[in-house]
Image 1: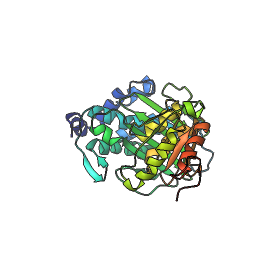
Image 2: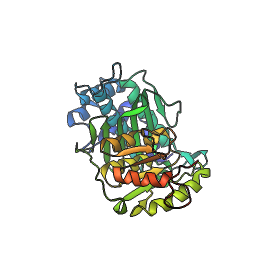
Image 3: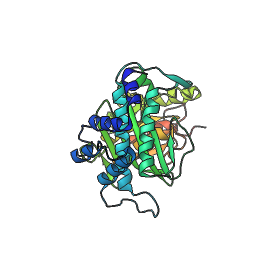
Image 4: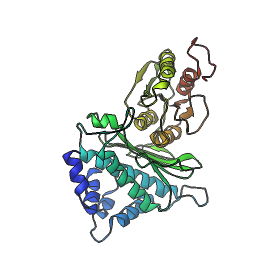
Length: 336
């Protein structure tokens, strides 16, 4: 554990919440009066966090499903939780971090767990009893509940590469209805609520352009955890590169999707992801006017983890490539 991470670990709860407030000095942070409330000594941390989220949420509900969480409150809570987890990551600092191996190409650091602890505690304090699937503690995918990636891009983080994110999403009926993606080292937070659009930290609405695919820049990732899928990806890459202008590989799916929603990329495709990697980002893309499906074209959050996302024309071009076999370029028969 780094010195910064160790210092964070040994702070009291009140010290951590004050540090979170100090680390959130960005256009997307809570207003000044809310930041001041975070350090009130007479309030316990969980009460502070619930009060902050409820104050930030306002009173107008966004959810039309009886018995479901108030989406305005859920959106404020997701944003705050993602930024709080990001404060843990930022406090740990850029540099090389020791890792434990969970599986082939699958790593975890102490900071992953510390961020998850903060995020889960906030979500639980505002919505007690609502199921939470978080990457490090595991569990089943909730039909109605939270999904959390407390540090997306652990390999990047462990090697001092700043392309990491925190992803928090609320599922209703198995689909994301609230999402927040925060990039602690890059200083942005993107949020979305179903039917309400996607926004950046300054409140500006995100809207995808829909370029000619031949002028599109798209991103991807490699299935290093499931090497048996590499041949499928290699064939797909060749077909994608015949259809788009260029390709990027940042190494954090939540940021790939956030960048797609913001128009930095025009599309994204990858195999074998987990629901916590993509739930919030998929909602960002659809609420920004994009399309999300699996590699065969089935709409909605891909439970397979095989995702294609982008503006309508770019999504269609990528889908041609992901559906095709490894043979002729025009063969669009589906993969086995």
